[in-house]
Amino acid sequence: MKLLKASIIAAALTMTTAVPVASAGTGYWYVYASKVNGFRTCAQYSPGSGWYKASSTGYTSRGACNYYGR
Image 1 (cartoon, rainbow, N blue to C red):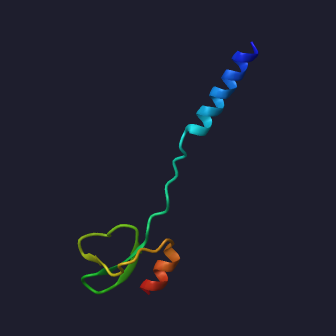
Image 2 (cartoon, rainbow, N blue to C red):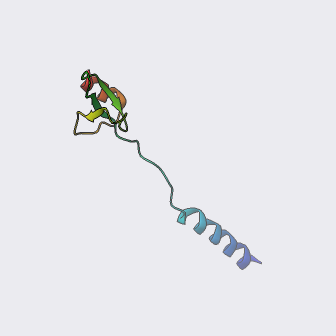
């Protein structure tokens, strides 16, 4: 009985520690400029075909991106 209990506990511990933790990182923010009037905005993806990426570097927070874009 002790062996069965010990093997169940060992199996439970193995399953809980062997499962990888899925965590997504934050997406990068980029400065996009309008092709029409040059207005700049911050976005994680392109707002559309009328915009081009004005910054080559991605920022980890929207605050840093907005500071650059204004």
